Length: 139
Image 1: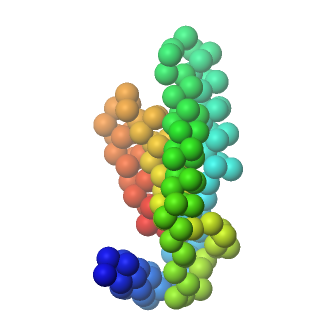
Image 2: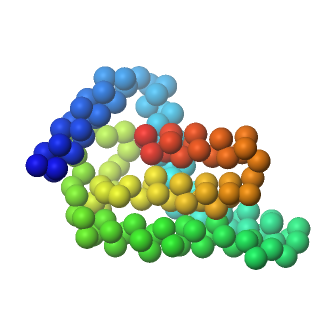
């Protein structure tokens, strides 16, 4: 029953996303998907940690990379446990990973790093990070 409801939700959401496709939106969402990639997030987190560490010693200097590592240690085993296949109703913008679809690793990774970077930041930074995470999750 729940699986049927989730499947119906998937189909409606994917139909809506497909109806909104355009060259500029396709390009934007392709870029947003990469914002949740470990290929981008790990160097960003490590670079920011090294920069922060240089300014002054802080016990939080490595909070970003540790948040990413902890997220990966939770998300990838959970993907295997849930083993939810990716819906393939419409053509994807980017090559689809072979692993399960839930939970979304790129959304979880983006959220983890945003929280790690933004928890002590000013509200405009937090708001920007929040918008970025929502956009990555939507992509």
